[in-house]
Length: 344
Image (spheres, rainbow, N blue to C red):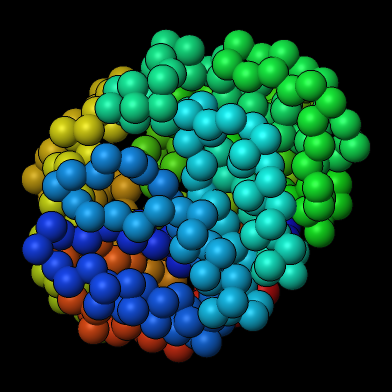
C-alpha cells in the first residue's frame, strides 16, 4: 500500500446554469483556483464534456492553459480527457505545450467517455471506445518519447510524425486512467501510471474494486503506484446539517443530469440509479459534513483504500460563488491540516 504524503486537489467542472452570466462565471472560476492554491491545495483538475445542455461549460485545455499563468505551484490535471474522441498527435502537442507553459506541472488524465452525442459529433462509435483509447494511449506515449513515430491506428495514421517540443516532464507527464467497471480498471493497471478512481461509485464498491486493481498490477508485473488519486464530491460547513442543507440541492441537480446522460449505466450492477433522493445518494458516495466529519472520511479513504491524492469537487452549477469560497477556506484552514496531522 502506498505511503506517499496526502495531497489535495480542487476539481472544477466549469459547468453553469444556462441563465448565468458566463463572463462572471469565468472570473469566479479563476478566483476559486487561485484561492485553492493559496489555501494549500496541491492540484487543480479541469474535467471535460461536450454538448453539456442543460449546462454551459468551459472547455478543458484552454482553461488549463490560462491557469498555467494564474497559478505558480499547483499541478494542473487534464482530468479527464475523453481520449477515445480525439486524434493522438493533436492531444500530444497540446498537452506538451501546456506542460511547458506551466513549468512541468501537467497531469494527463484519460478515460473512455460514454455519451452517444459526443461520440457521434467526433465521428466515433461508442462500441469502439476501448480500442480507440488504447491506440491513442500507445501513440501518445510514443509521440512524447520518440523523435519520429510511424503507426497506423483504426482512426489515424502517423507517418514519421513528431511531437516537437516534447513535454518538460520525462519520460512524459503522469498518465492517470479513469475507470468505473472492472475491465476498465484492469486497463488502467496495464496502460496507466495509476488508476484515477471515479467520483460516482460507492466507497463500498471501490473497496472491492481496489482488489481487482491490485490483482491486475500483479498480473502485469507492475508495482502499486506511489500516487493513488480519487475524485469525490466534497462540501464542508460548520455542521453536518448545514453542509447537507447548503450543498444538497446543487449536487442533486448535477446527479439528475448525470442520470439523464447515461452515467448511471457505467456503474457497477446494483448502483446504477443516480437520481435517488439526496440522502440515499450521498450516504456512501460523497464527503459532506463538518470539518471533523470530513477529516474522518478522508483519513478513512487513505487507510482503507490507499487514496493519497483526493481531488475534491466543491462547486456545482448555479451554486453561489461565496459558498465555494467558504468551503475552500474551511478545507484549507481546518480539514487539510487535521488530515495531515492524523496521518503523520
